[in-house]
Image (cartoon, rainbow, N blue to C red; front, side, top):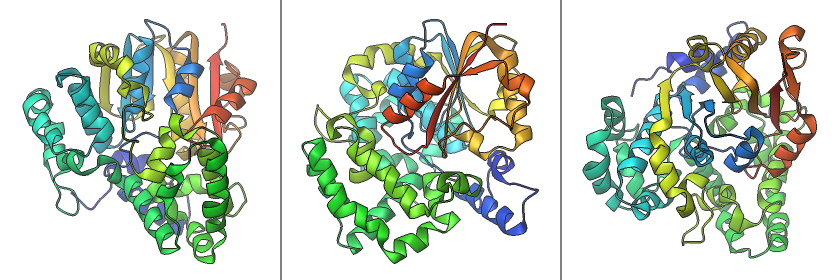
Length: 406
């Protein structure tokens, strides 16, 4: 793998008008973000689908990331999902998911491939059922080697969710915790929300008071593994010590939702989905949704592209729903204005836009021109409810905008 960042990622995150130290941090993040970052996306698809109110026939424009939400949206029967990503590894992962969902012989093999993702049989299944139908670029990615010489496809035999930038970050966090005599897997023994809170308060909350943890989390580069660039760090901190912010976000993840319903907690504390038929899973991996997702997988188009550029090449009034994840946290005012100008041009009546922010408030007021922002209705009360119910608990705000009647 080359030692320079993907130019699309660098263009998105490097602030050329910033001081040299900030530009160097931005470039370091762009380099780190070049490989696989998210084997699993960290936005709650159940909240997404509630907010988006996807209807049969809708066209959706979304940032792909790890693809869990892209394929989960298929359960709502949209006509088409156009997924874009600046990261070529994410493009390859989404292409693999689409073909595997369509071509693996049954639900058990799909579940083993993506829910377990740690079985040697997955590599044989890839060669027999997936590879013959996969595009050449994705084949080259998955059969190529990572920075330590491992074939990437073997990640599905040895624990895919332990790989990638986020997987490595969680693994490092587990190692540091164990060195401080805290075992994150102990949390998974809880059987009630009350037990979850008791374990968190006894074992995990004090961890964030340690001097080493407070020092290291004060370094902007320390959160690269969460996919948080330097430009987003200050918004996440909100003027508070980062250790305090992370403790509050982890407390929500650990204590606000039953463990048996929250697969994000299983990923954070167990580095994978729970075992057994009752393990919580994203909608696209649930048995009840298997046939619908398989039959609709071809409706997903995956592009290595910038969202604004993709929309600029699209016809007017051609999309109903838009999902931006937290990408706007990275953007300048000019980039935000260009994006929302294309969103407004391509939006059909009743269009909805959903995005997340590291900080609690929406970032659009005061940054978009009033005449452009005035075309959209911010659903503030609904957005607060979506934020409370987002099981991933990473973000300060989940925000919904709806196009006003002309």
